[in-house]
Length: 307
Image (cartoon, rainbow, N blue to C red):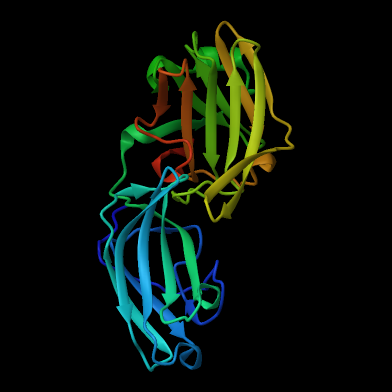
């Protein structure tokens, strides 16, 4: 999907404010921007601000470190104000990194009397087009989702790769089958599934994570609870209560996930987001699609339910 570049008009409800003197109508926390120009739209309590200046500061937070991008001061006697904060240069920022907008009313006699607040996290994902190399085969099957059945039905060219690890998928009316092979040497293979296919900058509650450990032939399944604190973003693993099954034969493993566990209504042609991450060692990791990042759904590929 191609998106034009242009102005982003901010108009949502503010969060993380210490007062209501300046209220942002955007960006809302956890938003994913697709455009390159930010115009902040605010409502001002002119009785509180009076003749004082208000300063807006756009900052970028990477690895917990905040760096100022731009800062603008303004005075207004009107209850609404729009401020152009300029262009965002990043094609992608998300996961635990983000932009934030801080506001402060100048002129307070004491620090304890300052009126200020902030909006964060704000992510950026520029979608530039469909990449066929990031599409995972997901064919409908009338036979049981088993390693034995998949062995005879699939060829090597049907599989995508995360390093040496090969993956494809099959589906029926009840379940999704993730098929793994050639995973010798991998400590874990982790599959992220985004049923809404939002291509967002941040993990969300609905994203589901399945990790297969070949050494002990075991499955773990989690989702993430995300919270925002003054220091940044915190993702906490939560146990996913599910009915996932698996079976393995001759080096091929099928992970069977009921659609009800994924919360997805299925139909031919449905697209969902998927990312696969093979971990061999601290220095050797691989991903499908190439360059995908675990904490940024916007970097994951697509699976299409086909006949």
